[in-house]
Image 1: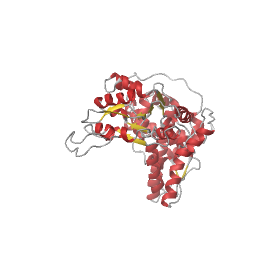
Image 2: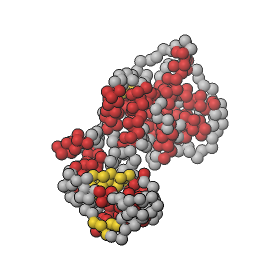
Image 3: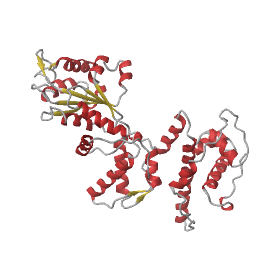
Image 4: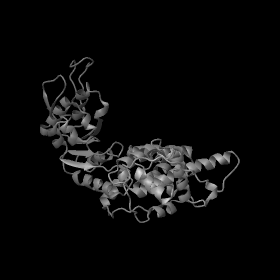
Length: 407
């Protein structure tokens, strides 16, 4: 399956960094982030890496350190969100013996341990305001005080920070110091979310599936076109981390199978909620995508019916190519139609008698028409309730009623 994306020709250095750090994907935004990282690495500036949780931000501080003059010194990664507020200052800057209960000996902090090297502060927005003030002093002068000490110490360190928080909003709300934000973000690098990386999703899925099968000596899985399309449409709120988790589950429980969209959907418990949210929050409705989602719902229900009848021993004639993704997509590529906004029209009640499926030729349009007729019948002709049941907009339902003569 082909995904149209802007042409990007990465440099040899970008390709080398990708291979060295195991970065998979060719999305222009991702390659641009790698190139920007390599450009700033030799220059001793503070860097702020932003991006959603699970997008892979942790690779980029490693690239910065490895391609800098500090590469032979220490690299320390600190998860600021995992350290309790009461001990964060001690962890970062160290403490003197007896400075607090339990301080039975003096201890070096990360800034002292990593002197001459690089420190990576992950989830930096979680730092308490008092710790932010200490960090600002380090960035401005290289000076810090251990907890319980009055002796100023110096450190020569490069700070790379990362966050999934909107830092501008955090500053506006008083949760993060504005002066520290500007100190940290001398250079800012944004890592794109997985949903914006196009064909990278299929590449990553294949890699995760292959790696898992090889590690545990399981038969490999393959992905059908409909499975790849579903993964492409899904929003992946957990980004690469979530994709890896899902694919490893599929590789375990469906070992050796050719994976379909229905099989993938079973490992995405929030899929229906994700698609419904996408429909209700999209500024400009994509009616072709709504049609595709409706047809997918119909096909999913029909697949369940088929399996149930097979278990009951009745069987059902399967039509070759019915689930073919290219055929579905060709219908969605038809020219746009004129729509009338009926969203404020009162819901008129009328009875719609569902027409038996067996009395009509077996086509996608007839399946769609039957599903709409059945929904209207179940809801007493109330269109808004029927649209909600079918997970489509009220405007789409009015158009379908008119198109199929269901008034």
